[in-house]
Image 1: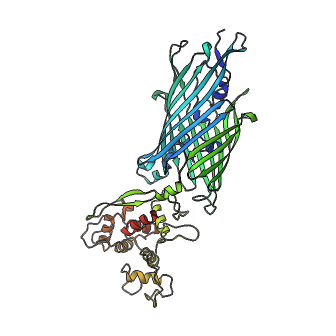
Image 2: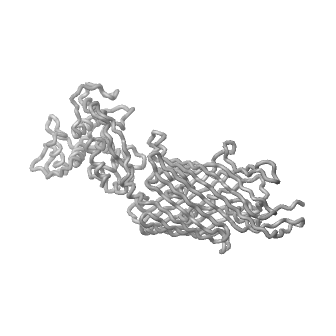
Image 3: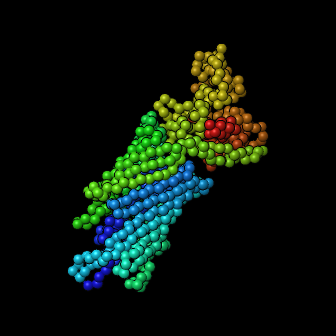
Length: 572
């Protein structure tokens, strides 16, 4: 019977990396391991490796590269652990945002020194040869993440992030004396990730791990040896990871009035190579801004006498964050033996995301008028101090304008926490918005400003002030009609006065349903040239349609006043 070398300790490594427990050095037609499956940070490990939909620190390089798209500052992560007292495991990575997206690099190393070499005798009994070998596996990552709207000009794309990781695999054995020849191999593959954030408090993540087909190079190759005349190719298994994260407490959560943060994550791994699907469940609680408590359940396939079974391993962890630097610890159970429990430690840098979001500005070129150069203004897409509303979700077309003007105190919300963006405005409400935008706090009038608007009415002082500014006026019968809905044509005319637009030039109507002779056509044309009606691009004008609260916010944010106030707000 042919004698071949066997690595006694190798099954430990291969089990952790989802090999079979009977693997030997005589490489068969099988699949190699992806070292990132062990874990890539004490934070996700403490959460049972449920991190695909959260992916908000340096671990995103390995867990879901789409998470890189949301980085506002550079990040660093590192981790070390001694798995089952024999396997040295090290992770280090860094990522930084640039104008064209976010780039990340990472490296994982798995090593086992001093593995005793045995031989299988004719009777099947292993005998120690007196030699030792070393096993080493390395995995390099080059990752990129970006918002999808960088490539696809649709509103929905603003809620979706995409990411791609190129991967280089290195694995091999060295030493072993004359009974075992040294050998190393290389492989290529890539991960493709997505994040979808339909609400402020919920995110869905999807990561296709090792998605590159074998025909395009997605494989691992062992070179020729003295005992093998041809290179040996192995599969790199594809795993589909689907996750969901819900923020139950804290800012932008289901319960925003609760000061502490609580995240709950659930991931499902669907393997395409002879392994059962498993799930990961984890929670992260921040009782104070600098301290995190974590717990989770990490499922994995495990070898047993009955074949491959599902093992539930319990995890826990603690995190400390100070001045942007992080220290994380994770406890991870492996099987039922207490001596197999592993402790992981991570050091990293995440920066002050809230501070960075306050500073983040995105330049947008506003369509110029016929007599002016393009105007560059600064807006921001997310800022913790902005007022937010339950009924103005991520991706809503006027979300930014609503939150800016609400924060500035120009357009308020309702006591139930809603903004009601599609609600129509009446003339009294519209007058109040314009006066507040001018920064005026008028006194109650001494007499009735209009016959149908007594001085004691809440809107009287605003209507009187708006009339004095020549922004609004009464009807020929002398009444103001404060409760009458403002039509779109009336609203554009009034806001064009507010913005001091030139409406005296002869115009050709920019909308098919608004004739050039219409009384509002000059103001509408001026508003179009100023970029105030970009939200109607490709649509009809519908001059008699009621004006909504969202439309007023959007138009005001595009005026010279709006741009200046928003810039001032963002600069603190």
